[in-house]
Structures are given as C-alpha cells and as structure tokens.
Image (cartoon, rainbow, N blue to C red; front, side, top):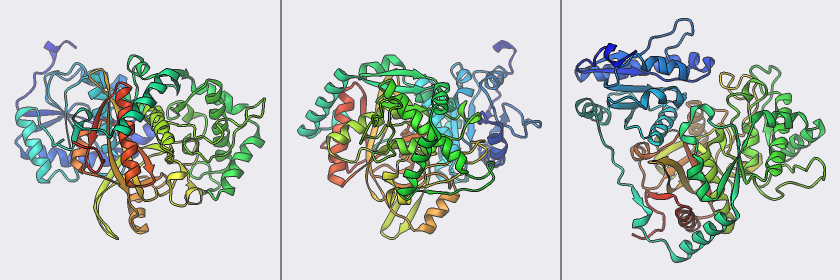
Length: 547
C-alpha cells in the first residue's frame, strides 16, 4: 500500500506492536503474560494524555495476538504510516527478524519496552531486538519496568512521548583507549592476537540465524580480519552423523556421565518426561558433533537446533554444556580410534550465536595462556532482583541459558549437574538440559556485537554468589527451572546501566581462580581483542586497569 493511502499519524497516538515466537505452541502459552503487560503499559501511556492503537489484531484461530512470522511482520508494516510513533511491547521471547524488514524503513520514533520479569521472558527478547536494530543501524530508544507505575519508567516514558527520544546513564562505560593496560598484559594480548591471526581459526556454523537473532550473525568482512573464518555446515549433516554413531558408543558416553555423578531426571512419558531414549540420542549428537568438528578442523562450533532439528530429534542442550567442559566423555575417531580433542573443551556457542563464538574462542585461548580454567559459556541476561542476606547486599542477576553451561561452572561439578526434560512448548521431542547452580567465584563477563559496520566488545568484572537454596528455587520457579542458573553481580554496573547498554540477549562469562587473576585475564583479553581489530569498552569498576 503506498504511503499516501495510509492513515496519517494522529496527534498523541502511538502504534503498539507485539512480536512473538515462530512456534505457535509458545505464542499460545505466553499470550496471557503479554496481554497483562500490554494492559499495564497502555494505562501508563494514557495517563500521559496519549492513546494507543494496536498495529495488529488478536488472532482467534491461533489464540494469541503476536506477530508470528517475517511474512506477517511485513504485512503489518504495510498498514502503518512510516512516520507513526511506534512502541514494541515485549513480555516474551521474540524473533527479531519478524520486525526488522519493516523497522528498516520506519521513520517515526521507535521505543522498545519490556516487563521486568523472568517468566518467558520479555527482557531477553527486547535485548535481542535492541542488538539487532543496533547492528542494522536503526535508531530506537528502550525502557523496562515491573509494573509500569514507577517513577523511573513514567519519567522516561513522558520524555519519549514528548520528544521522541530519551537517554540513559551509561557512565559506567569507558573506551579501552582511555585506560592504561599493564605492560605485561598488553604485550601478552598483542602476542596472542598475532599468533591467532597468523594461525587462523575455523568457526563451524550449523546453519545461521537461529531464532531470528540477526545480531548474532557476524558478517564475513568483519569476522575474517580477526583471523576467524566460517565453515558453513548443515544440521542435516549433524543428523546424518548421529545416524552413523553406534548404540554402544552412545551408551558409553551416557555411562561415563553417570559414573561422574551426573543425575538424569527421567520418566516414562516422552511427551512430558526425559527418557533414556532421548538421552541416548543426545549422546549420539555429542559424538557426531565432536567428529564433525575434527573433520573440518573447527576450533569452535555452534549448533542452531531450535528450528529444524527440533522436529526430528531431542534438544542439543546437554551436548552443548558437555562440549564446553575440558573434562568430558572421550570421543574416538570412527576409523583410527584416536581420541579427538583430548584434554580440551570443544568451545560451543549456544543458538549458533557467532558473536559468542568469537568471544568464547578468544576467551579459551587467553585463559589457557594464563593457566586459568578455560571453560566459558554464554547465558541469557534473564532477570534479577536485589538480595540482602548471608553476606550479600547487592543487585543479583539471574543469568540462565538453555544450553552451553559446563559442569565445571557448577557447585560440585558433575555431581552437582542434572539433566531435566526441556519444556515441551519449545522442545516437542524433549531432550535433557545441563543444569546446575553456578559456584561462587570471580568472573569476567563480555559481549561482542556489531555496530556501525564494526565489531565491538563490552567487558567487565563481576562475581558469582551463593544464595540460600530456597531463594535459588524461587528464582528458578520465576524463570525456567530446567536450566542452569548463575547468581551474578556486575561490579560497578547497575541494573539500569546494563539494560541501557547491553547489545544482546546473551552475555559471555568465564571464571578465574581469584580477583587478581580475573583482572589480569580481562586485561589480556581486552588487549587481544583490540589487536584483533575490535573496539573494546570497559564497563564498571574493580578491573585492575589504570585511568
């Protein structure tokens, strides 16, 4: 429809969009939370003297009111005047590519809003959409709230409605160029970068673009100068490799994990329970993934899983967590019997997030050079609340991810690791997770992202704390209890500062043995990333760097 045929924007009226999942089952289950969030948000907007018009209607046949595909998103934008103020309200995980085509040609002010809840979660979806728009060069503003009645939210909303823009405090961020790295760290980082670019590395990609995460794809012209090149693999090849794995080999992996003390929470109903058969297939996937990584010389791999494999086999999450662990079941070459990647993790980036893949690979190299535990993983920035008690008095994040977290990160290692059946609305054929409670300790966090056609990395320091079991269970129940959890504190970066700045749903984390070692690891990694051509930004404090 030509723009001239569209209704002109009405004064003090915002168009509201609700983007959703590609999976109908998820959209149906999550719709009540979205409906409740929209009611509260609309009330807050009306208090400011504005009206709200929904840009698309509730779909009775599908029993939800989300945009559920890229096709539908394009159709919706054809009915919206490009100068209209646009509010994208998110209480759920969403597929950013549903909206991006329309957003790229929208000229009016754009505001993304999420409810402060870990339930489905809108925070994660909004952060992904934000990072995708940043990569695409789309101007936007962002807000978040628990009930949409707090002073922070109302003041910021009023400013956006009046001016079409707003700002947040990001004073916790400093460019690496303004800081002085210790000479030994700068020299080691530079040396590792030179070696990395000379040797080069292969990133195995089992199909790009998982879950609409446009921000998770690094264009080749930005990735290759770092020394990393993609090996584009197919998930069908992974499935074929799984079919070639002997049952005895899969049983050996399963038995190895049980001997280590890992628990498998099983039942008899495959639609709702984890079964031994599901785990057996996951063990085949683990073996096939290691063999393919070896065959193609991959230094790191990422399995998409969610779209495609979810319709033919159990989930990849158990596989991803075990791959990221140095101590893991041995996998032998099918013909020679050679143990592949002996004594090493096979760094895996969950949901084929290539930004996490580059980050995780560099982290692995730096941590090994410093003789620190190299296991690292991404998590979702899922949610969080302040906590006081047992020596903790701070804002404690819930970092949570479906797959990827290695048992080495958990209290009691494998003995503190369990595998539980994935939620059916996301994983129809089941499969187990790699679940545990992250151990207390000092961490380095980071995120690689694309902005202005250049690679950037935000990084900072933090720690993981132990909360009472009752509080851990409460936080799990408010999110996804089948998944691994990390109780994280980000030094010198508040909740709102992290939300204002972070360019992804994912955050990379790695432990160091103590605070001094973590400071050094951050400095060396920052130096290496900078030498690889990334724009590095140090976030927060307590990082051992000098102004």
